[in-house]
Image (cartoon, rainbow, N blue to C red; front, side, top):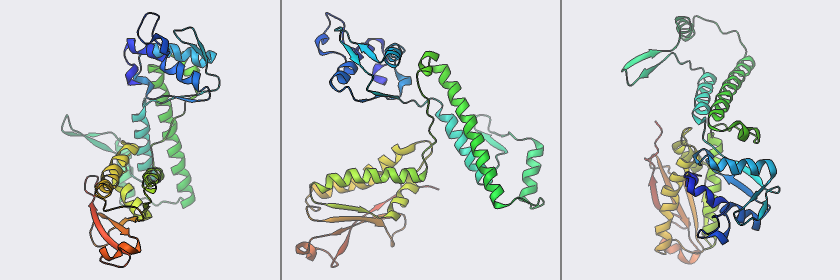
Length: 314
């Protein structure tokens, strides 16, 4: 919604006033819904929009219709309205990290302040002594594994509750109560490695569909997917980092082969983790029988290795 951040750009949603250029074309929002009444309308990163946008949004959510500058009333009652926002994301990330630390048994007792160049203690002496006692083995843990798991789940739930309250409080400072009262707020957790694996498979399917038009098959082994996710995963950057990795190290590698005619119809490309070269992916090509003489082996030949060093996880 950043393209609607200025006052004069908001009018594009419902069309230009009479006498202005493009008045007869209607609004970008109203005309699109008028032509396709059963639609999903997405306001992406709505916090970047000008406040005047919310005036239209209130009418849309309340009455289910909008009137464009030509006087045509557009029905939105058959539409699903979705607005996304990054407001409060820092609270979700902080809660996720704290919950992960507690689930793994880590306790934060201080952090280094880069501006003051000193260690800031954030835990009291009792907490520090408790941690030292547990580390030294002086305290006997009498809880069972089941009790420990239940306690960990309770701590995670507590962090999520606190994070949700912080997100809603920040949203209340940004959006008017009239807007929030007309919406159902859904707060998402950060993406997990398993989520990124599913996203990777979706990206792979998109590329495989394009290659299938040229009768080229693409296969990515599960260990290669795990290999990529381990290097591209980040709570803070989400799936965009994975997409950059995919575009650079997979799609970007295939494009020259296809353009040069080296990879062509009837071939199968298989991507695996290299067993001979550390921290690398290998692309193996299975060629039609009439072309196998070009390979060093009967079925598979290594055509390229993709060193992975841009997203190394320490």
